[in-house]
Length: 107
Image 1 (cartoon, rainbow, N blue to C red):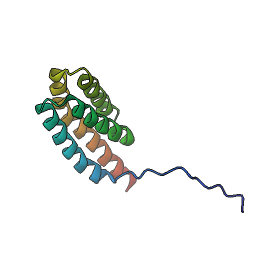
Image 2: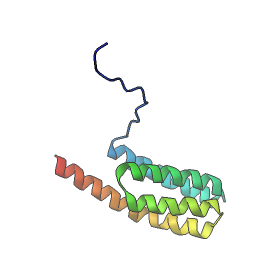
Image 3: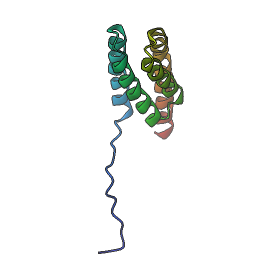
Image 4: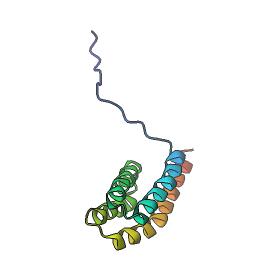
């Protein structure tokens, strides 16, 4: 065998930015539905998905809101969940604009 190393760890594929933005819309809709249904545990799971996606893309502000959403869901604070949900569109918009600006610089 040659001196080349072989990585056996699974690789994680990251969706292109456009697909992640589409997924973000769906994820926000899912979160809204879970909050409306009184499903705190489901809201926590969805908030974790948002946080992970935001962190992957470098969206610290969005990840912070998602962290707050998860914390609110864990204690069943639906007022805080609704407040965080209202803040998501602006945070997604900022992240999308930053991603587009970065893509523009790279082209």
